[in-house]
Length: 295
Image (cartoon, rainbow, N blue to C red; front, top):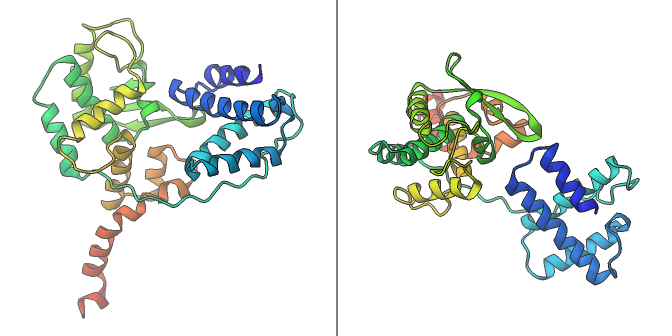
């Protein structure tokens, strides 16, 4: 079945996370069921763009958000690209599709105080889980890595001599990120405690049972600890990534450097974080500009 072949491809060759593969599977199965109902189980390989448009309209009619629809169409588009690659179809029916407009929501980053409060709280305990959770927060905030990137870090990716960590990002792109001294200290303590849990596992972050950590566990760690110090609605690993970028830019970091640290392929992706640092920029501007001092 083409869908199963595609899922195997993104799992084994693209090495997508289990969470991402599950999302692709759900999106494609939703479309397959639509085809089964509306087009008498017509093979997905023969579906055309007008038929896909009908699916989009059906999703809109049941109040599925534009961002969710865009994700589903992106999954379908990737699937058809795979079918092109395997020569099962000649043309991608979604090649010229334009994504639905989505209103941009401003994500509020954590303040430095909120992050320090969490780290201070975690610093009070020295058991395996507390050390692991502290390291998770420190790595997120000091490197800006994605949740999937953190989960896939291996012990061999840590280079204490050069004070860096190797991260495998989107499209299997590797990048090296500097490690702060404080992070290295937590790393050393965690690795020592980790050896009592499992010395054979190659991945850095483990559960207390010695298994590799998973998406929902990482989210739960961040949400639980930041709920104690922050009243913000959204508390997730991505908000820490957002905080990392915002705080660097607020302190005058070069946009291109932040882009490289985040693993973005274009500056456009990094520029979404600049709005959060505009407040401090305006303050500096008003203090420094000659005309401002005359008013």
